[in-house]
Length: 564
Image 1 (cartoon, rainbow, N blue to C red):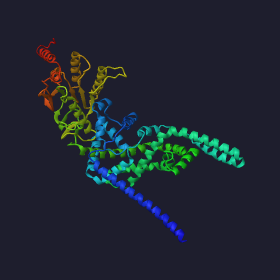
Image 2: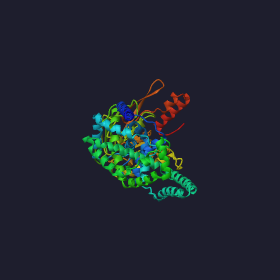
Image 3: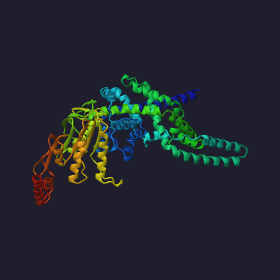
Image 4: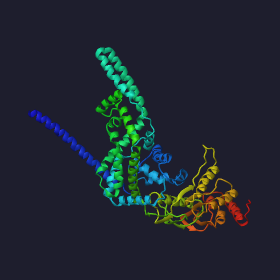
């Protein structure tokens, strides 16, 4: 009897020890997570992405576009690439989950024109910035969801909604075949064993064939299970300021009771030989196809509740991205909450606006109600200024955060035509690519919605005479009451031709000790200096070339005639 007590006590001690080790391990892990969250607040946590992984982030946005899940304006691919928004997104991406970064990317590509949406974003951003304890509750959950997916989850979620459910009859026949072979063995051991081996071979072969087809979908189900498990924890979250989002998440996850039941048959054991128990379960799955049968059941439940999954993803993604924006604000030297006005007449005012990607940016101030022509020497800051204004406008209507001391403007559609390239695959020259890009902007003018557009070096892909004449007419057609066009140009002629329609600004440079220095400050009026010929001299071109080039330029300025 005493020996039995010792055995029981020993077993209890082992179990208690395992429990203590697990508790200590969990406590240490939570301590690590909390310390990491504190350290990374306001600085982000840069993640290295492969090209493929980064491209996947955009798929949530693209899928919503294709399915027309979202209405309203969006930042098109040309504008997104012109502004180098992939890099901007990476700096802004302080999220901790796949779903958060997918949502944040989508948010950046959809400038809002509804005050109520931006006002709610501001409320959430401010709340999370000011309430560290409550913020950490959500950050911990998003960290547990993680960013470890090996498939573009939004693709497979929408593909799953269209997958045709297969009949389970072949799987039931596979199970029946095993039992039939066992029964046969009772009467004829040799025939029964042979039949059993044949059936097992057929079952294993058909198992691997079908499992291969659904492997990526199983990864998606694993992700959904993780979302559901995290959503279960929201039952215990009592934060009134985010109650509406928590309740939406809880309501959505309750529709997946049947989906979760027995799901371990499908989503566990995906890596063969993980443990002895799992190895045994692997063989059980191969022979009896229980995970394939359950997969079809889960697929049916998933397709019935696609709206609930979308709701869960949107609410979780929103909360993660709002926390990320609050963290991003902490990383900025200074920022302002934009003042946006709904009116037909276009205007934009900003004080000390700077480019958020530059380490030591120069801030500039502008206040305008009509188009802006920017002139200046090469490398003086024209393109950077255009991008600064454009990014500020995008930020104002998306993350409600402007890299400026003050930003006030109307709600805009935002388009650009700046960093274009030849389309070799489409057999299109730079000029064709450029005029198509400009045409898409001109098409928007007729909509009467305030339009903010940016053009760098209008029609640079053609000869001087046609460039100036066509550019003048294109820019004039953009000089409407509801349009603000910021255009950078080297053609001083345009500043005279369009003086009635555009305000002139310029950047300056200073030649000092065989070097050209730029202060990147914006000045009113057109540029009066030229540095292209001076640059030739600075980098060592022959003095005779420099002298004759300056003489030719001076002659043209005085006479309007080119001569050598």
